[in-house]
Length: 67
Image 1 (tube, rainbow, N blue to C red):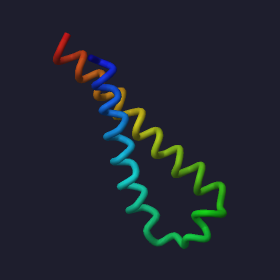
Image 2: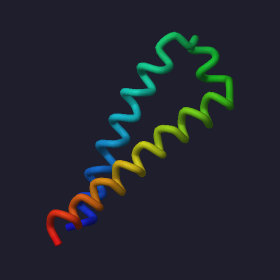
Image 3: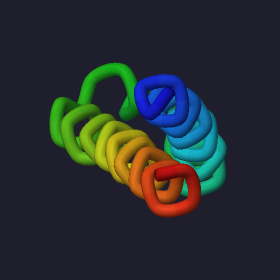
Image 4: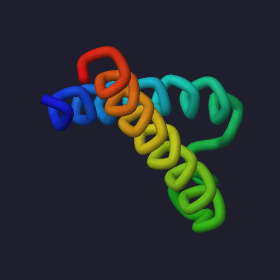
C-alpha cells in the first residue's frame, strides 16, 4: 500500500509542478522555451524534484499514520 501512496504522491507532485511551471514561465516566449537548453534542464529538473519530494512525503505520511 505504501507504493500506492508513493505513486499518488508522484502524480500529484507532477501535476503541482506543472501548475507551478505554468505560473513561472507564463511570460517566456515560445521560441525560448523550445530552443534554450538551460530552461529545459532547470525547470524540467525542478518539476521532477517536486514530484519526487511529494512522492517521498506521501509514502512517509502513509507509514507514519498506517504502520
